Length: 378
Picture (cartoon, rainbow, N blue to C red):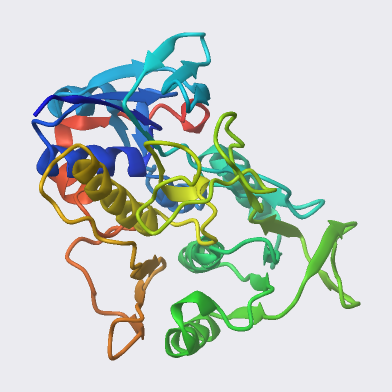
């Protein structure tokens, strides 16, 4: 069986998970090149803890990972692809030919509530952390955390709320925390049963939640609401609405996201797969990206002639709500208990990104972790 050339474009968890899966499924069938715009894969969901005064998000050396997995590594960004010629062009003008292409480029932060501080993960750690530190002299600051209707994955907002509550509790300080969300229930994507337990948990922490509420903007100390009225606040932190990378050469929707089928294949783009936040799937979450990467890897292995049966994407949603007492959340249509919230661990590793091969691999290779150099470098 002749070896095929696979280009994996992206430097996040989806790209690395796919490499790990393909090493297992098709070690002799593919010559793989990893094209990534930065030197490190960052576990971005951990950035919420760093932003509220906790430990830094972990960074891992992509070049070292590529070397360990016996794949070629190019540190550059993807500029465009020519599907008919099976050719990719990087930002510095390098042309890379491929037989198959896996895209794992992630999403970009889009519009944010006017007047609010943006929290889009690693890139906003220092701004949010500094703003929280400036509340030190306020006797009882009111902090509002907002998710607008265009935000599908709201768990980081609740993480911020519970971690800020824990920080103030440790300091013996009073505070008022308000979550404003368009959701019908807190974390409603996990189902009614889990949402009900989360609501009780937040209430016990003194965190007030305004559900089914749309915010218009923050100005002059007031968070203005779309249906009328306002909330007085000292600080407002909001999640941005995600936008796709709008990659030239592949079909995208009006927001720049790439439509894919249940095996991760891009419609109308020969031998191209896409996974993670850049796809048109509405929930942008690391654990789902891991599952999508595994599905795409199986499909690519079959395409390369490996005798495996590709499995379609059947998501299991898992999330870890941080705080003094973390809560493990799960939602799956395949279970007799589809909606679950528990203080007891529901998976083996106490991790924000759950499932697949990535976390066990990184746990087994601590030498791959980079020293933290500051948020500006991430």
